[in-house]
Image (tube, rainbow, N blue to C red):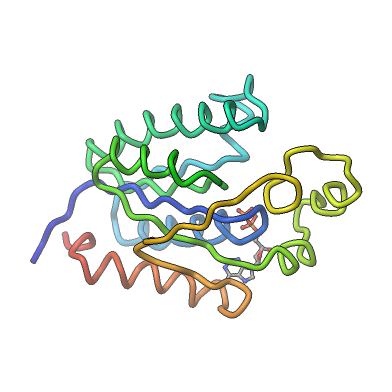
Amino acid sequence: MCNHRGITLWFTGLSGAGKTTIAVSLAEKLRERGFKVERLDGDVVRKSLTRDLGFSKEDRDKNIERVTFVAKLLTRNDVIVPCAFISPYRAERARAREEIGEFIEVYVECPVEVCAERDAKGLYAKAFAGEIPHFTGVSDPYEPPENAEVVCHTAKETVEESVAKVLAYLEQNGYLCT
Ligand code: ADP
């Protein structure tokens, strides 16, 4: 069955879990196959669209609310939209799902110890030293998804395996026919 249409792929997980890495590789593979793709990423959006926001619960919710609006517009114009956001609150992710409609949640699961060991952005060292308040997984909550369509265990999988899982889900559900 062919159902090609726009879809938001919502990557959620701790900082350093692998959201951006998976989303970048996935976007590349989809573009090679001729799909329209627009990636939204927390680190980028927070320097532009939501640069006025911080990391309180209220600001995190506003961040996701604005991104949801953009993802919704793209999705309804038949774009594949990988979104990489920590998005720690279940309620806010549920709101994004409801608002966008065509929505697949990808839980990028990785133990905080492994994220801290990777410390790709040098943030965990500072967070553990108490220099960054409201740091998800250290001094701020993260509510794991209960019913994500795809779960990537990045401490146990290679990047290629994690990306393949998401692609397989899209294939099996008819999103990638042309
Ligand atoms: P996030 O976007 O979640 O903050 P990043 O993608 O910036 O995380 O960083 C994740 C790091 O973990 C990268 O250095 C990446 O190479 C590494 N990594 C190891 N295994 C995986 C995997 N299976 N999927 C994604 N990233 C992985």
